[in-house]
Image (cartoon, rainbow, N blue to C red; front, side, top):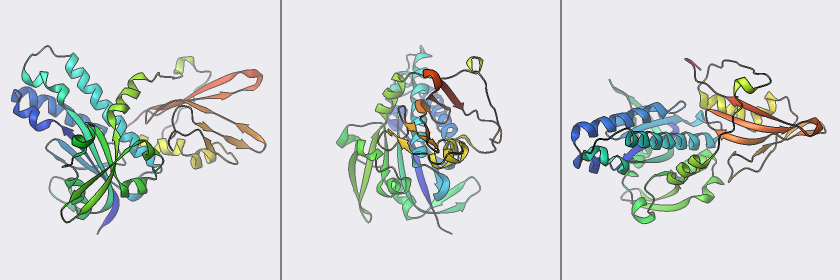
Length: 309
């Protein structure tokens, strides 16, 4: 039976050239390490369908994301982890073989589509089949880098943008069109992931450590961090959690919650305005709130994965 949902491919670029110009043993070690990282970073609600050479293919049913921003942030986090791993591999080797010298030529791209698919069980994995699945795979062969110069990117199709509700976020993306026989033209929105990496390297951390806190509250929740993150950060759910009358949000960055965003917590005539200082999906977020007598409080909400939640 056909289902509607998100189709995601994470593909290591430069793979073929890397193998052909490298010592095979070291090349395979490097690629195995990076593929393992992609598997680790493909977190629920994304489900891995299968591996295909240098790519990880995953999917998520239609209602998996309470906020479209969450899928964007899973992809951004994966790319940052990939770049950090690539840097460590470069720094931790003194080997002069072609494989180790070619590590900087490896990069990562993502294709994100929304459409129909059928899960076809096989002895090894759940195979995704359907026209939208075929389209997603066809998108791997594109002219994005050739025409835009962007090597590391996340490409979102128009149906994916619509389903995720990230139209405002796409204002900062470049539009790109691919044309395929029997499929026609496909409009893509291209996010430059090199800019995500540069932004992440420049950001300072604002984190209230347990030893510094006036008090701490801990609880265990039987759900994966991205889903719990959505419940804690989506205004509709924060309103319930804070027992507020309303929870409007100000200062979003191109439709996204980010440092500088303000959750306005309305209790009758009282307005409490916690402002986000640090935003690290799905690790933690820190906000600052004005207190009486001109003081301020800092609160960090931290998400630590456990077995089962």
